[in-house]
Image (cartoon, rainbow, N blue to C red; front, side):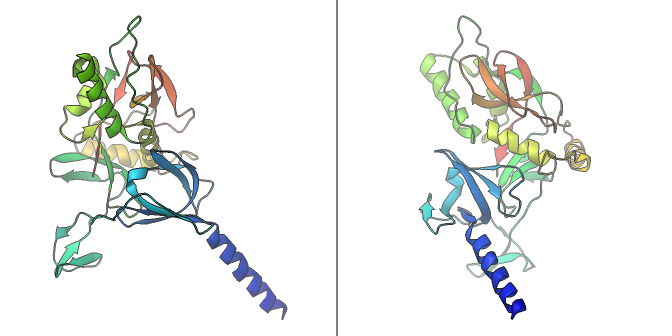
Length: 287
């Protein structure tokens, strides 16, 4: 009898635990069991339900189909779920069938070389299913964010924290509206000249890159993770990520400063630095 009661209690607790999780379903149909901690107009910040003491992840709202909260309520963000990018192939494990044809679904890993459709870089951020994410450029450079100094400091409006592509658009619009050129924004120009789709990452994207560079968490010094990441960069002919120097993000604080982050394990991870100073720049591209 006592054993039966204990089993029932354990099952009841298991139900409560399961009910306490939020479910994020992305537009690519992948699912994330999470605990949502913050929702803004641009992004959702969450912790993995299986690791509540771990890092906070950031997911742009436009990548979310809907969220089913622990209380049973559902909030929809997208009208439909697009098909994932697929490549025709022979039938194999991990394939999908569409229209009578068998397709292999490519799943990537952090630190893997991505080289498709003219985009070449190292995978630095991934969706839960490993199909989509960001690649970081093989090279880097010291550049100022912009060239404006006193008394001509300017607020551009690049306040998006989770999607650097939106900030790039704002810079482009600002240039057109004020008779400027990309030369006035050296960091953005360098990323843009890599080709269509390359951009200067937003601050939350930089933070995610830093976490993934260190194996998914900065709570411990995972030398194997960042050595493997840097090794992949070098094998592809690129330059190692710098762990001590701050990288510019596209997210500005005010007319004088923009947010920066580094790859090291020691906080603070975000520091505001004058836009006219030269710091490291890496470009990213979504896939």
